[in-house]
Image 1 (cartoon, rainbow, N blue to C red):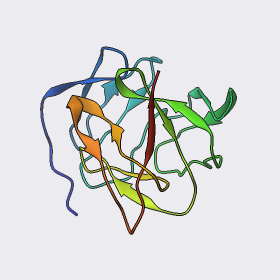
Image 2: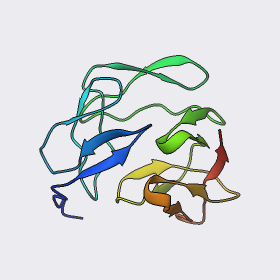
Image 3: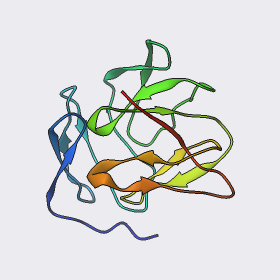
Image 4: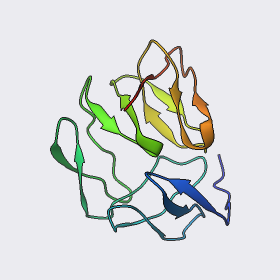
Length: 127
């Protein structure tokens, strides 16, 4: 897919705003700058540390992938908690790809739902 620029601020992660444009920098809740491009793997942090996988610290860096922990609970947009599993990739509401597992759908940004991906779905639990 060719990244396209939304050129608009979108609600993201507990009320913070993210400008999702190819090559643009967007402030996130943790204060890191993050390019968010359509059709690309979600990129954030740029060297910052974020709580992840049972309170462990995991770097989320530009151009790098992140080791996900099987069955870990991850706080996400609008207070939703998502249980991630290794082994499959799912399209998010804005085109990014994330690991997912079987079983249900999960509320996402703008009340969208993440559904099926290569035969998998995402477990979602409200917080």
